Length: 458
Image (cartoon, rainbow, N blue to C red):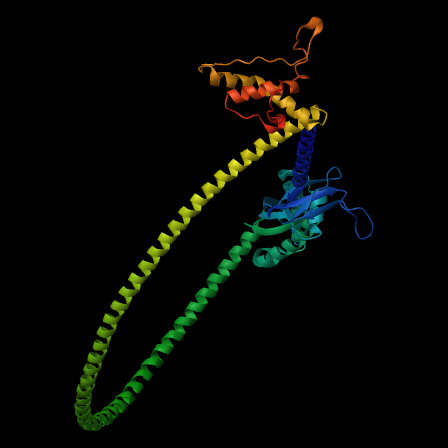
């Protein structure tokens, strides 16, 4: 019991240890970066690594010497309302914009994020990113004219993305999107540029409209002239074409009627020939169908007879097999029952004889190994039962003769004694013989043989 309890305790401990070890195997979700810090190895130059970053995988966290945290890859939206930024023309402008950034999964940049952003809250990361973006926006605006910023917006956004992302990578972030909503200035320069561009566009449009109207009038007159000339030429050509077309139509109609007559003749002949062939094929098909119908009916009748005979034969075989199987099972069951009964009787007889043999062996051993003395002990043990059986057998019988005997051994003061009954048992065998004779029984030969009677001497 103690060994079982000890084994159970050891098993529980080992199971708990395995579960604990499995719990140290951590998987990194796809929207996070797992940062393992502590003893995580060394760099190529032999210095100790500060952290190991894993994205989209799993790792075993060594107890005691290692720990882990997650960096969230969810995009961060940052509103940057830049005001009074000085351009290259010394004009201050306002650039409201919105930047979307996130933790980078690029190797090396992830390491920067683990070293500089691990443990920071979302608001802290937003403030840090906003400071970097403010500085880079002011730097870019200072190197560009307002015209470039306002008209060439793609160039401005490209410069912003390039400079801002370079600085964000230093802290482990990447720039996802830049959206500049509107650009304005306090002096109204951008508004004036817009009005100038609008006026220029309006004037250019008016000039273009006038030129187009002039060109349209000239073109309309030329078009009418060309129309009259072209109509006349087209009418003459059309009349000539109509006449030629009518001639071609007449010739075509004649050729058509000729071809139609020839086709009708050929079609009529072919129709007659095909009708005759069809009748011939029909007669042949009917004859073939009659032969096939006769063969089918004959095969059907033969198949019915053969199938019925086969079914009756199979039924008889199955019935015979079932009857034979039933007889075999019944005979096997009776044989098994007889065999079991005989085996049980044999085992019981064997057990009885074994017990009797063991008892006889113990009696012989108690008699000092003397078989005769052992037999005397057995007879002495059963003598009372023998006498009771003998008395029960003759208690209702009229006895004409009673014989009294003594062992012949005298006791003290000339009196008989029964103290030495066992030692004098064998000397009392002759009177015992008379008892057996009176009851109609024969004394066993092992108790002695009866001597031949001799005449008494006078």
